[in-house]
Length: 229
Length: 229
Figure 1 (cartoon, each protein chain N blue to C red):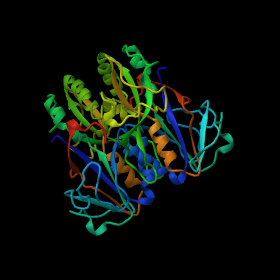
Figure 2: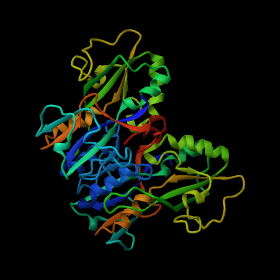
Figure 3: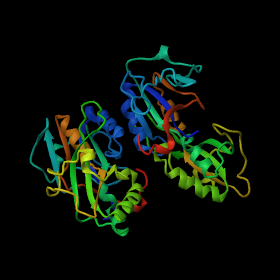
Figure 4: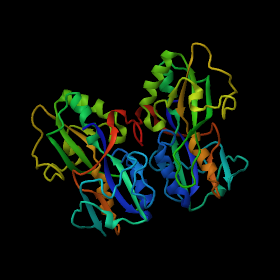
């Protein structure tokens, strides 16, 4: 809690421009914190000394869009043409929310929506969101607090009716199925770092590596001090 | 005043990834608002219907790093492999500063510094800044106001002593030479959109086109409503 966390996507160099462009076109969902040079597993700018082949606890691997078994490291898969993208995560501002009185350990889901993202080359797909149920007071505070973290998804993209953005409450990507928003609560939606992972999956690259769900990369950067990559 | 303005850089496709990466690595100086598809002169996302070959009042052209005469349009230079980058401009928040009591029509310079930017491929160079002289009260207000425009350079990168960032007061890129900051004023420095243009010049691409100084691209987007590209 309180450190800048990152989602990870690793792709071969031929996909790098289109994927970076996809991120630029969808900055709420895909705030890029660092792009490594091809073949270099060290994120020299935001986590010098780290090794992206070993320093996440679990990795997910796809070949041509087919998911393989998760792995605890990717040393044997590393190649000279791989480019790693570190993308901001909303978990980065959990401590700031907690300090402001907004609980972060429950009533949280990751959901597909029917909102399209802007495509770039083969990368396309729906916006994935993080939904929280908050009191109206917490919703206002959470909006102000998260707006201070524009490189970790920033302010909400929607507030209120889940149907207005086609949020799929029945089949969450993370969290139990839900029926309706409870009385006295308001649903608040943030763009989620699963969005670029889904877009990269849709592109069916010959090789793609990502952090496994809930096993993102944690930097030594204090979130309170991190205004820009 | 009050509309989102953009600096323009146009490069052939082979330079596009490294230049986009340069912008990602230097987001204060190079907030990318749109990247066009190769050969398409229309910025479909932030200015649909516009034509980047004709809709700026003056263009500057370089071939292999050599500057040619400025042109009023670039229709005859357009090619199927050209990619246009629209980069946020600090002029976007001038109206917001004026409304907050910060004058924007004088005491403003564009200066080289000795701060290096993060290189990407052949793109590298010093950070270029916009300096304003403000009263302490105005400096505090200007910091708060500009922070609300993270995609148009956002908050200042430095405040106070010009020598601390090696700001070259003797040879401004824009504005008359200056000797010292007048009594009662404090110098405030923002990352400037001339930075990526200088980096692109340093790369000496076979062809590069940019807006001519003080002839940037003005969109129909209201700055007050523009939080994200």
